[in-house]
Length: 200
Image 1: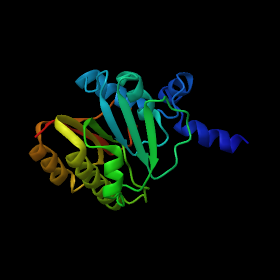
Image 2: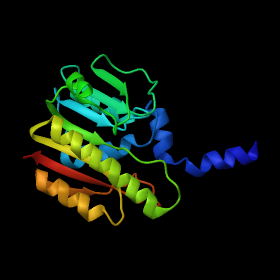
Image 3: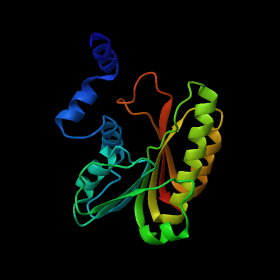
């Protein structure tokens, strides 16, 4: 029992304890909170698409900000089991396999596309970064199809040799471009967020 407790406490910090206290399923909610505090992207009434939404923290946070006049759609390859408000809809889907029917069902009038997608890590930084880049390209492709003109895109990427390539792709498609590293990201993490503001 002592061994499992030690393993559990290794990943527990004040963010994970705060998330539990505030009824969010994961500490990742505070990354989005930091982004929102700095850039004030999400507004009441917005329509938001959250890619890689498992276990649901970003969905809940975004839904709280949009209010019931807005809507939030979450997508993840893993089933999300939390209870969500009426203005939230969750799809279980592989982002690499979504088809025209799926796009038709979600619509193409989103104010913001969020992507906190991350690959299953291998421990090999180059492999993990390459897989992250593939997910980011898929997220950007979706954003290009569903965002309204002037819409915003927030995407997590693992820093690696494709980072500049992806950054340039975002820069081309949006009026403004920012890089943001939340304080709530774990120190050992190579993740960073790229923001595209004002879809062309």
